[in-house]
Image (cartoon, rainbow, N blue to C red):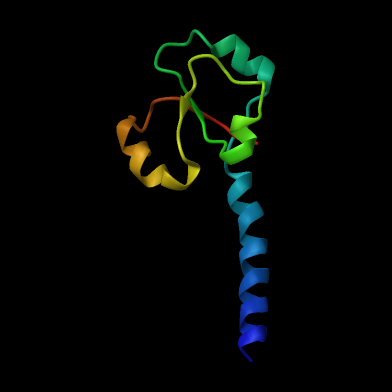
Length: 88
């Protein structure tokens, strides 16, 4: 019974996740390049572990932030401030 409940919970979570992701706007690298000098734009590099440490591609001026800690660092920014989260 526990396995069935776990499996159903997992399926529900997987069905819910794409719906949430659809609400998040994305930006191409060319669009980002054109906005790099925009006032108040904050670029947050939320890659973790080897995704960040082994990458040769880092955006100059990006701030490292743990994606899991969004509840903490998001308090540092105004609700209308443009944020770009860079992830793997």
